[in-house]
Image 1 (cartoon, one colour):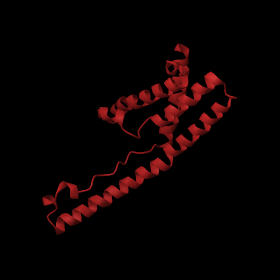
Image 2 (tube, rainbow, N blue to C red):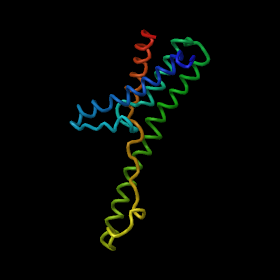
Image 3 (cartoon, helix red, strand yellow):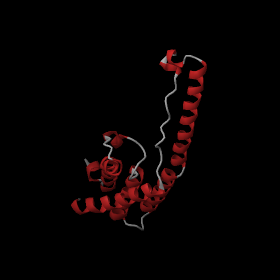
Image 4 (tube, rainbow, N blue to C red):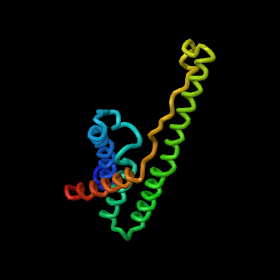
Length: 157
């Protein structure tokens, strides 16, 4: 039952849920497209990874103090995750866009040369997921929402 008293953990989990759910109305406002599946996908505004680690670090700072060793570990962990979200994962997503276009171009070529539509589905390739990482602004707002959620939850904790 002590698990339920772990404020940093619950702040991080709440930040993940918030960041994932808020993607739906943000997408609706920006593109007029309602897509509830965004709550279960990667990428997009805000970054749930950034929100989670920022809320975790903020929760640790609140409960353990900003001079504690565990806060230092959480802070460095957060920086690495946020850097990765806007760097390596974003680049992988951009490479997926190019690879998907190459696959489409190749399939178009094969369609012209052979009867592609009669091939078995297992012979066709699935598209790679292109929305993997985040733009820096998405990481920033993910981190900001995580910090704010941790402080708001702490007032009720």
